[in-house]
Amino acid sequence: MTFRVLLVEDNPGDARLVELLLSEVGSAAFEISHSDTLGEALELLKAEEFDVALVDLSLPDASGLDSVKAMQGAVPYLPVVVLSGTADEEVAVEAISGGAEDYLVKGQGDGALISRAIRYAIERKKAEERLFYLSQHDALTGLANRALFQDRLGHAVARAEREGEAVALISVDLDHFKDFNDALGNRFGDELLKTAAGRLKECVREGDTVARLGSDEFGVILEDVSDVPFVVSVARRISEVLSRPFEVRGEEMIMSAGMGIAICPPSKPERLVREASAALQRAKSAGTGEYRFFSSEMNVEAFEQLAFESSLRLALERGEFELHYQPQVELSTGRIVGAEALLRWNRPGLGLTPPSKVIPVLERNGMILAVGAWVIETACEQSRAWRDQGLPPLRMAVNLSPKQFAQPNLSEVISKALARASLAPEDLELEITESLLMDDTEESETKLKVIKAERGVRVSIDDFGTGYSSLAYLKRFPLDVLKVDRSFIWDLTEEADDASIVAAIIGLAHNLRLKVIAEGVETSAQLDYLRRQGCDEAQGYYFSRPISATDFARLLESDETPFDTNPTN
Ligand code: C2E
Ligand code: MG
Ligand code: MG
Image 1 (cartoon, protein in one colour):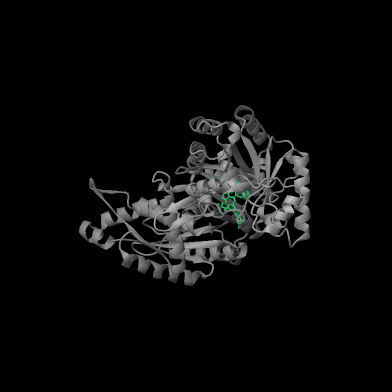
Image 2 (spheres, rainbow, N blue to C red; image 1 turned 135 degrees about the vertical axis):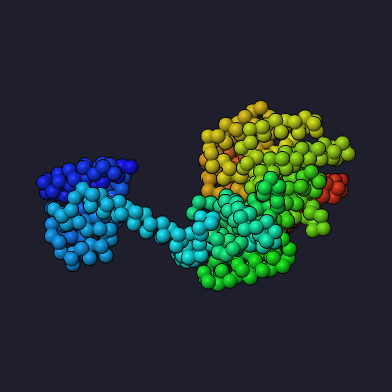
């Protein structure tokens, strides 16, 4: 056994003596590094690992216990043996209570004594460190114990309050643990708890805490929580990992756990613990493998979100998506010249769900690509169907989400849909948003050019004016149509600012040879203003809400008598 010793001693004679005495000890080997000053010693501690330090109490740059404190500040559990020139009992006591493990008087004792002092010092420090660890951890599972849990929870809540974040506490209690334990014995019970502990740790991020709070009760602290669905996802993961089979004497057993969840804010640490266990009680009485939030509103919200997301996942294959169509009217003639396809989810028993609720979820779970392709295909098919019914040909507009635009095979999706419906590229219009162009300018520019050059489809900028781009900037991109966002149209007749912005947009767009469509036109006064400013087309409730394909066909049939786009005359 070799001990690495840091000897801090400025007197060369004393240093040499210690080295000599230790080299004569047969039972252990000492590898000694020597430094003359505290400063040098601290450098060495940073660079190398030592088992122990022997420190002279009077150094050129430090005296007394300052050096012990400085060294233990640098390496927390460093065992230190103090060397002193005098046998002063008071200094000895002070040294020990100040953190040193032992006290040797120079010139007294032999190598064996110094060696013993060193080895005891190391042992004692190890024991001390171990005790401290044990005072914070559960011996069986190695998880944090209740003391450390409470400490961490306190810190987490304080931090959350400071940073305006949330902390979630999940109380986990294994179902039927006592039965398992009674039937199979304590040894098995211990194994099971250890496995459960390991699996629980898999479910959290680094920095989160998993603690054992009772025999089969665990506490999980999640910091930095941004929303309820995240907490739900952790709870479900816990439920999932714990229900993976456990092997017991070659047989597979299934475990489950109940969970109670509480969130701070609003609750403070002690309340949080009580709320989580109240929720746990409710989960337990509901059955096995259940979780409950403390507040019932959270339950409802979380469950609704869950149900929503999981049924949305099946909506495409179950054919629950529909497109509704909103007419685009040419202001010079009052005729319908285009249709915008708008996604609706016809959720069984719950009716039509608007895209504002659906699209963000599809974006998150990656389904937007499949659904987006379905939208393009279906809109093209519909356009073909109307033509085949003898209705006047229209331009069909579909909305593209940024992820769809970024997908590599977008251009194939488009050409396939066009070919299947035997439509010309210019019969299709893609609506994209400004932010999409601004996010990755180079890439978007290339992409758009490819789509336009190869396919010749039309491209429009949707919700124009809500982003941060300028018209001049848009010149870079090959665009055809600009759709003025409905927020400008709504206040057109009340807000002079909005009116002049709209007039300016129309003028500039025309200079860039872009067609202008006004969105969200609801009143004849708005329509009148737009027409007088030379806006090309308009879309909005004034003409029609988005309607089903059948209703749209009926509207087209009656288009023999066009809309009156000059209502003030
Ligand atoms: P958008 O492209 O700006 O679509 C126009 C929205 O304005 C539609 O809402 C339409 O119902 C609404 N609207 C039209 N005229 C009026 C009016 O006069 N007054 C009022 N108050 N509203 C009017 P919707 O259908 O809820 O769609 C919302 C957004 O969802 C769309 O905004 C579009 O960005 C997105 N979206 C819709 N369908 C799809 C789709 O198939 N794919 C993608 N990626 N996004 C879609
Ligand atoms: Mg649109
Ligand atoms: Mg829009």
